[in-house]
Structures are given as C-alpha cells and as structure tokens.
Length: 193
Image (tube, rainbow, N blue to C red; front, side, top):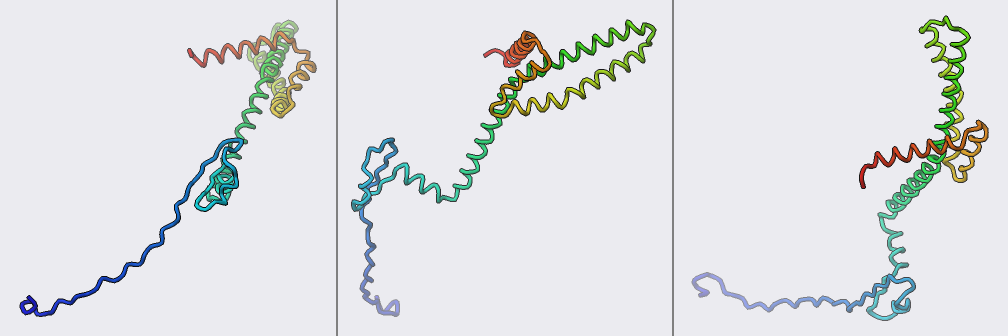
C-alpha cells in the first residue's frame, strides 16, 4: 500500500495527555435558620463550605448590585414616608373643609345683609361685590389652610386640626359630618368588593 500512495506510513506514539487535577469534593451546607442550625466552625473542615445569612450579606455587599439595592431601599423608605405624611394630612381635611364652609356661610350672610341695606343694587354690581368678597376670603384662608396641611403631614402634627377648630370656633359636629360625607364618597368610588 505504501507504493501506491507514495509515502511510508509512520508509526507515532500518542502524546501523553496531561492529567487534569480534580478538585476535592465540596459539601455545601446552607443554613438560613435564625438561630443557626449548623455550627459556624464547620467551615474549617476540608471540603465543607457553609453558606449562612452572614455570608450572603457579605457577598451581596460586595456585589455590583449593592448600589441598586441601596437605591431601592431609599425609594421604598421615601414612599413609606410619603404615604405616612399623606395619611396624617388626610385627617385635617375635614377640618379645613368645615372652615371653608363656615367662611362661605359668612360671605353669604354678609351679601344678604348688604342686599337688605342696598335694595336697589343691580345684578351686575351685586355679582361683582359677591365675587370680590369671596376672593378676599379665599385669599385670606389659602395660606393658613395650605400650611396647616403641611404641618399636619409631619410626625406629631395631629394637634393642628384641634388648633384650627379652636381658633375658628368650628363646630365638632360639622367637622364630623364632613368626615362622614368623605368616607361615604370614598366607599361609593371603590365600588362593590
């Protein structure tokens, strides 16, 4: 066969294959119990690796996503704080509504009194005077009502509703009725459960 092909086949010896060192078998122990179920000293045994809450916390602190986790924690903390502030501020809303309702009643009473004193007042002038008085009252109440909502949203701000009721001599029943009306409206908006 060598003459037909023109070359002589060589007999080669196979090259020795480098033996890959095999790692020692490793036993992983996962202990997420509080308190621990596995003694922390087992990590000193050859071929044993303990994974516990502390080692996971250490690994996650060095992980690239640690900054993302911190950012998520900040977002959650901010949202919880905002929700708490909104809940605290919502408690003052009936008092503010009662105050504005009382102011509207005062405006209506003064306009009626003006009509009694000036019976010949035409509709155009009456409407302009009414609008002007309403604007004055709204402007006077705007800053205090906005500020009291801000103050009530802060921790410990529950006393501001009481202060507002005392300062303006608001009837507690009027405030309670506004609160009941708001609750019934909220229930209607939710729909059937």
